[in-house]
Amino acid sequence: MKVLVACEESQRVCIAFREKGHESYSCDIIECSGGHPEWHIKGDARAVANGRCSFLTQDGTHHSIDGKWDLMIVHPPCTRLCNSGQRWLYWGSEEYRANKKKEQEEAIDFFMFWTTVDCDRIAIENPMGIMSTLYRQPDFTYNPYDFEGETECKKTGIWIVGDLPKLKPTRNIPLPKEERTQGIWKAHFGDKKLAWNSPETARLRSQTPKGVAKAMSEQWG
Image 1 (tube, helix red, strand yellow):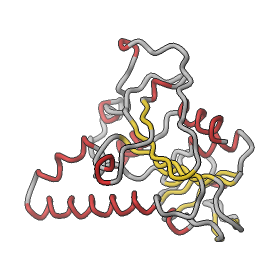
Image 2 (tube, rainbow, N blue to C red; image 1 turned 90 degrees about the vertical axis):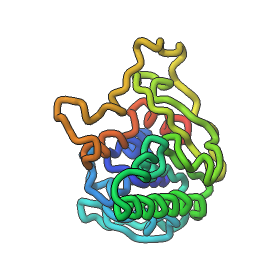
Image 3 (tube, rainbow, N blue to C red; image 1 turned 30 degrees about the vertical axis):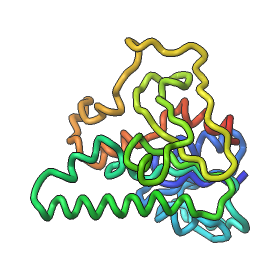
């Protein structure tokens, strides 16, 4: 199965599908950090979204997709879409607010692009935010701690376009509240003392938990 994981530099989902024998590729405008440049397309994912195209992976190898992608998993940037980011639209100078509003409009257009792509099975993932109103409610939501091996809290929605089942939690016994963590939310408070709005903080927060990636490959692969 040919799988495109759009807006993923960590390659966690891509690698999970590769481990199941699928021809999966991650795609992002930045280089991958997952250690497999031979599976990473560096560029705007919209350029390859509809399949029937040729592309280079980060290692310089030429590839081609003759038909549509069999499955597409998309992680649109959430900074201007998630609930926690809305306050910045009302902070700062008039110019600052106008720039943030423009960034939000672009983020909305980017999200909506993936609902029109020529692919029969699409999953669009984003933390809870304005797309639940501007588009529609997600088909299901989860927290990472719903999946075996994960403890993080981050309520996330998945919008399904086409024929995909809902992702089923893999943790048989609910994780007690006292064992749940918020490392994703507090990424910038770690040892590196990163700024809350630094690119590295955004990168860490955007990584799909390995337990979720594993469930996607097992249930959707």
